[in-house]
Length: 357
Image (tube, rainbow, N blue to C red; front, top):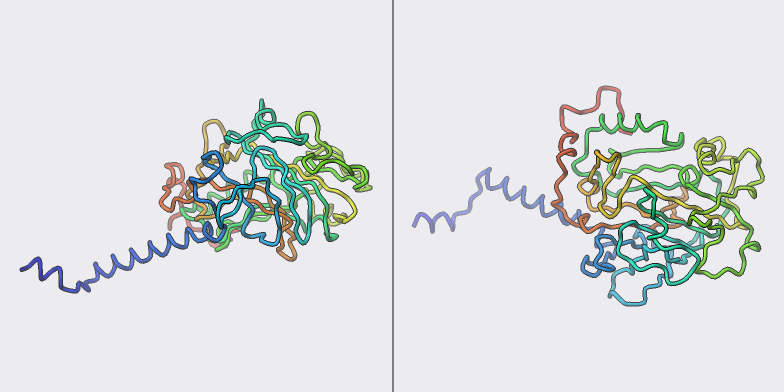
C-alpha cells in the first residue's frame, strides 16, 4: 500500500522539482547543441565518404554561394560532401567566383581523377602540414584589402571554456606570431577571431585573365612542382610589396599597408593556406610532440571553417566550407584531463579592469 501510495502521490518536493528542472535544461541544451548540424544539412555519419571520421561541406552560413560538386550520388535532402583529395570544385557567389581545392591529411579518399594537382599522398609526404586549401578566381566587386578577412566564428558560447586569464596569457605569448590586425573575442556569446586574408595565406598571386585563359577547370594556374602556389605580386604595381610569402604576410599585417590596395575585378587572384598544428583527423591542436589539446569539447556543436573569406563591412561570405568530425556530434563529449586543469571557475575570474577580448 505504501508503494502504491508513493507511486500515485504527486511529489512536489524541492528535490523532485530540481531534478525535473535539471532534466528539462539538459534536454533543451542537447537540442540546442544539435541545432546547427540539423540546419547545415549534415549527412548522418554512416553516410560520410569512405566511412571517414571527417566530412567537408559547404557552410550553411554562405547559402548564397553555389558549389558545383563532383559527387553525383544523391543523399536525399542532405548536402553533398566536398572532396578532400585535392579535386577541384568550382563555385560562384555575389562577391566572388572561382575554384577551390581542399586536402586533409590521413583521410581515406581517392586521388584526383584529373587536373594538374598532385595526390594527397604526394602533397603531404615529408611535410608537417595537416590540411590545405587553395582558391583561384575573380572578384565581382572592388574591395579594399583590409575589408576581406578570414578566421573562425561560432554561433554559441564555448562549453568547458578555459580560464579567460589563461587564454589571455596564451595569446600574449603568441602575439609576435599574430598579425597586428588580429581580432579576437573568445568569451562573447558568439566567439570569433579573424584577420585580413592577405595576412594569413602562405602563398598569394595575381594574374591577368588572358595569361591563364584556356586552362581546364580541373587545373590551377601557377602551381609549382612541390604543389605550392608560386608567389607573384608584381601586378599590384608596387615594388614595396615583398615577393616572398613570409615577408608579404608581415607587410600586410599592418592596416596602413592593407588600406593602400584593392582587389580588382579584372584580375585573377589565388590564395593558398595550410596548417601545421591543427590536426583535423583528430580535431586536436598539436602544439609540441608532448602537448596536445582536444578541441572537440569546446565548440558547442559548431565546426571549424575549412576555408573562409568574408567582406567585413557587409558580413557576406566570398566562400565558406566547414570540416566536421564525428565526435563534434556527441553532446556528452568530456574534456580531457589537461582541459579540466585549465577550466574556468570563480577563482579564475578576470581582475578588475580586465576585458575578455
